[in-house]
Image 1: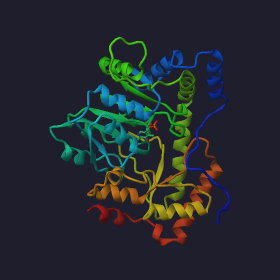
Image 2 (image 1 turned 180 degrees about the vertical axis):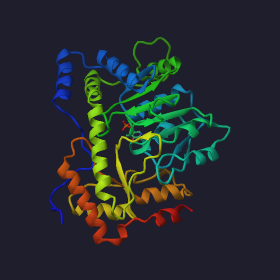
Image 3 (image 1 turned 30 degrees about the vertical axis):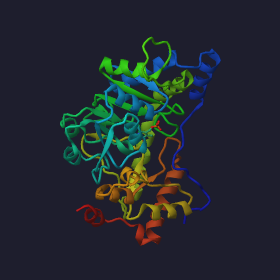
Image 4 (image 1 turned 180 degrees about the horizontal axis):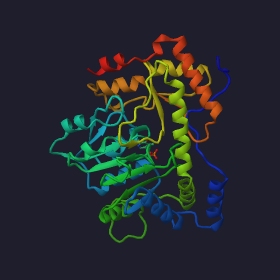
Length: 368
Ligand SMILES: *Cc1c(COP(=O)(O)O)cnc(C)c1O
C-alpha cells in the first residue's frame, strides 16, 4: 500500500526564478499599473492564438463580461452555455442581464454537445459560450455551423488545438483566464482576444473608466504591469509546461490502462493539453475519499453543474458526467514519484472498493 502521509495537492502554480525576476523588475521600475508590460502581454497572447488583438483584464470572468458587452448582449437576449462548466460563465451572462440557456455535454469528451445546443436555439439566442473543458477543445465545427456568434472560453485550454489551429482562434471572441492554477498564471487575470477592431475597441473602452468625455457604465477590469510581466514570462515557458503535462498524462494512461476506470478520450483532430487528467469511476466522491486516505487530493472537476445551481432538472448526461468524472493531480511541478504514487493510489482504490469501478455499460445506461 502507498504511504498514507504524503499529500499531493490537486493543483499547484508553476512559478520559477525567471518569473520572479520578471515581476521584480517591474516592481523596481516604479510603473505598477496597466502600461507597457500589459501591452506586450496582449501582443504576445494574441500572436500565440493567431488573433488580431487582445484586451487584458483582471480576471477571466471580467474578460467574459466584456466579451458579452462588446457583442451588444443584454436584457431580452439568450446565451447558450453548457451546464457542465465553471459557474463564472453563468455570472457573466447574468451581469449583462441576458438569460442563460443551459445545454448538455458530450458524455465522453465532456465538452458542450452541438446537437443539444441546436435544439435550444430560439429567435432570442445571441451567443454561444463554448468552454474547452479540461484542456480539450470542444467540437467547434458543428457549433460554428449553427450560425450564432461563438465566444470560446479557453480558461482551461491555453495551447489546445482543433484541426491543428489553436483553440481561441475560432470564435468571434475568445477569453482566457490566468488564475493561479490555470495553465499560465498572472495570479489573477484574464484576456479577451478577437480579430474585429470594433469588438477590441469596445472591450478596451469598457475596461477602464479614466479620461473619457462621454459617460457610460464602465468598469475597472485592468491588469497590472507586474502581473503582465509574469504572464509574458510564463508564456515563454508554455511549450515546456505543455510537454510536461502531456508526459504525465501518458504515464497515467499507461499505469491505469489495465484498471476498471475510464481514461480520457481524445477525439481525432484535437490536441489535448491535459489541464485536467479526468478519469471516470462509478462514484467520484467515493473514489476521492479513498484517494484522500492515500494522500492524494483528487476531486470532481465540476462538483455542481450549473443546472443544480439554477434549480433545473432534465440534464441526465451532465448528471452522469458530474457523478463519474474524477480529476487527478496534474501540473508541471508534479514529480515522477508523485505521479507513481497517484497511479498506485487509484489502483488500490478500485481494488478495495468495487463501488468505485467503472464499466462502459454504466456510462451507457445512464444517458440512454
Ligand atoms: C477558471 C475559469 C473561468 C474563470 O476565470 P477567473 O479568472 O477565475 O475569473 C472561466 N471559465 C472556465 C472554464 C474556467 O475554468
